[in-house]
Amino acid sequence: MALDHALAVCSQQGQGVLRLYSWMEATVSFGRNEPARGLYDRANAADQGIEFVRRPTGGRAVLHSNEVTYAIVVPVRALGGPRASYVEINRGLAEGLSSIGAAVTVTDHGETLSPDAGACFGVPAPGEIIAGEKKLVGSAQLRVGDALLQHGSIIIDGDQSLLNQLTGKLHDMVRPATLRSVLGVVHQDQVTLGVIDGLKHVLGGSWEEGEYLSGERTEAGRLERQRYSQAGWTWRR
Image 1 (tube, rainbow, N blue to C red):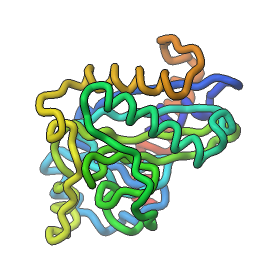
Image 2 (image 1 turned 30 degrees about the vertical axis):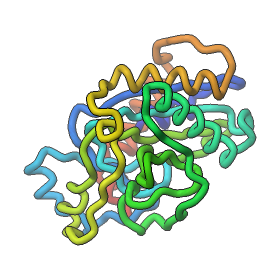
Image 3 (image 1 turned 120 degrees about the vertical axis):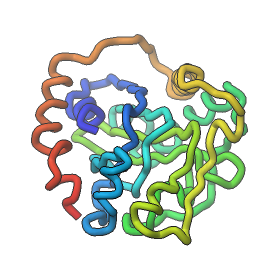
Image 4 (image 1 turned 90 degrees about the vertical axis):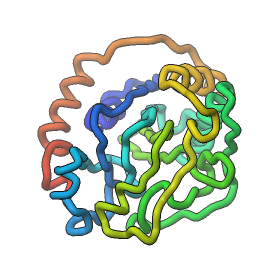
């Protein structure tokens, strides 16, 4: 979360950046303004090796495990503003996933729910990527000065049922679509390459692979120390 945020803070005029990564341990992330304090069994989570973090962006709880996570930073007006950017980025993701054989669509229906409405993958919102009628990719945005950060989870396998165990809401299981259920055997590298190609085609521009800049790492370290490693931030609500 700190590095995603830092990429937006350190963004350079007229440039964007795409980061793709996975998680070493299962982690629950909360949306920036989502109520969480007192709602989760933290002792149970610790016993299962599950960590918690709060995102810089909005939205609702996500269990990160067997997935590809993307973060993309673009100038806020480059794609027509936040809403238009959301649509274009998701269109690029959908094209990339389609290129590896996944039957996905960008839905034009669904519900936009409040931060306290439960797990992110419970109900698709307009503009999100679905397979069948189930959400496959969950995304959220943050504006940082003249930059826009959008990041989200592309589910490869598993479900979000551990969230229900940790909150005691066993009657309301969330089972999103997964690439494994759609494609069978699928590897992270395959998903990563498809996503890159889809975003390149839809967003255009010139692309090159690069390393993190020293300023980005420095800013990420500052944000990690002051915010993302702090229980006061994670459990602020």
